[in-house]
Image (cartoon, rainbow, N blue to C red; front, side, top):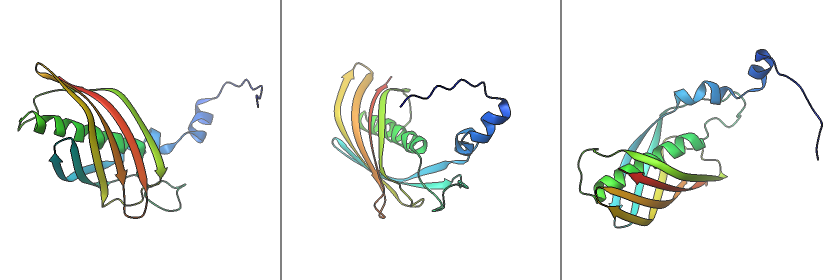
Length: 154
């Protein structure tokens, strides 16, 4: 269905129909990685939200956003690369080359977010490392995200 609409929005109109979370709330999302276990091509972790935005339009309270999820998935990728390289301090930059994320069902637990990452490819190129990973992020209430990332550690 195509609707012919042409309208120039005012600043006030834009503000009234925009997401408060995207404009302001994202800055309130603070998470921490509670535990990490690395074994061969797999990483298991637990994450918790230290602070988060409470949407006035979500009657169920907290829900994990794709933005916070991609942030800690990226951080876990960096951690995995450093562990694999035998490094004990962050010494390389990470470049997210590709990413995708799907929300299967809302994650409502702010205190016990679980992550399982499988590293599908990992190529060492001198001091650089290029890799791809698939992640499953879930909580005990049945919430679940899946994500795929391709990153370069350089």
